[in-house]
Length: 168
View 1 (tube, rainbow, N blue to C red):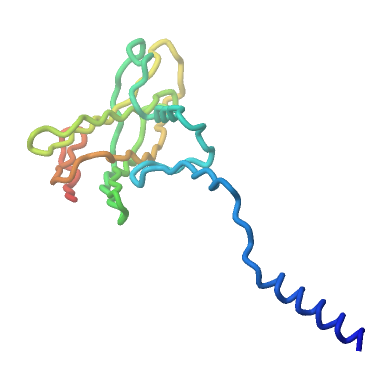
View 2: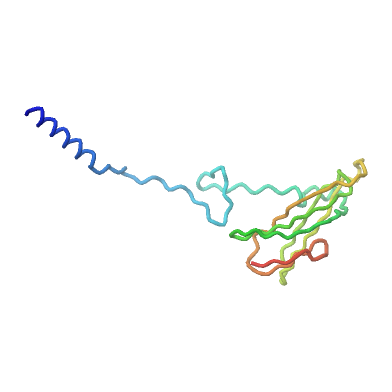
């Protein structure tokens, strides 16, 4: 009988202990920093209060040393205006063509839209005039983002020719 009473008391104690609420920590956990929904997500977290690193300049964008180089043509053979189904909308310009030589470097300059929503894009090349280079065409393909524009209707012109229209 004594064994039965001891076993019943032990079972009751374990049952009550298993049903008891768990004690919560005294302070809530620190909230993780959140990124606004319209900002790109980075795989490397930024320390709180620090400024994000500036995005690197794309290789096709005009560079500070371009003034010492000669400006030349880039033969644009294909232009496509691509609009991705995303929020915020992502628009890019897909360019394909050839450069006069492998020593030429592609440059793409995108002007801010004017009052009529016209975006002028200049596609050209730069080269060091003192450099000796083989005389053979060099192919290029480049995607140029046209993001960060306010909602509206836009017309894109590449080297003086209309490439397309988009709105959002």
